[in-house]
Amino acid sequence: MIGMKTNTSDDAGRGDATRRRLVEAAVRVFGENGYHAVGTRELAYAAGANQAAIPYYFGGKDGLHKAAAEDVAAGGRAAFAPLHQRLKAAPAESLGRDALAELARAIFSGLTRGLVGAMGESFRAAFIVREQLVPGPAFDILYEGYVREVHEAVTAVVAAARGFGPRTARAAIEAHALIGAALAFLVARATLCRRLDWEDYSPRRLNDIEDAVVGVALRALGLPEKAEVRS
Image 1 (tube, one colour):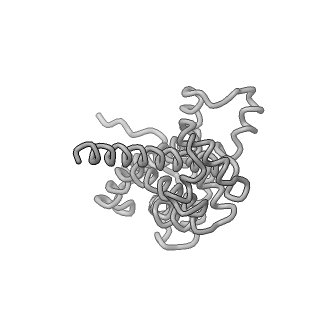
Image 2 (cartoon, helix red, strand yellow):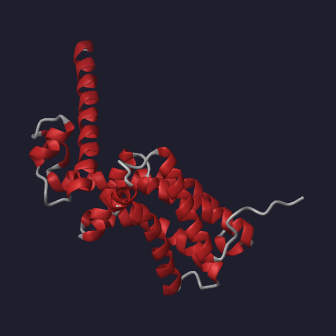
Image 3 (tube, rainbow, N blue to C red):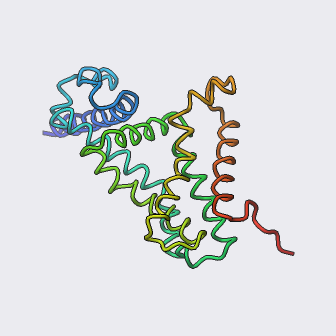
């Protein structure tokens, strides 16, 4: 009986590892190619798993696609949690210009890093972009689990800085435009690399991109680009 329990535990551990590999591979493959361009054979190969594992653990390609969306949403939500808690404790409309600028720096810095940072995270960002193009059940998961919260946070900062009502369409549209400033470095990555003769984004180049996006956002919002030094 002891041996049977050990085997069951080992099997469960292997099953969890297989399931995790499939989800990670799905995020990468769906992000690179989109939902309709890949099949279960390619997904299983990318994960180093048996093709039968996909229906076994997820019920099929649709289930794996949704699991990938849940994983991306959970990762984004966890990364954004500190800023979300900060906004809950001190809403954007209650902040002075310097504090609002500091909050905007943190949000646009984190947004840029999340979209165009390490390649593993870029796959996650690419997955979100793919779902924007052809929204389906996975987009619903992403939107409710992560995207809406980030968009509302940026909208709140825009509304406070520009003197709009936080629920106005203009605030949301301008927030969307500023998010697009960061997003451009993901979706048009190849163009910038060709333009500047880069092979890819290095850590130093990513710092420059982050500074540029934050600077554009602060100038657009009329917020101070550098924290005021007080004597």
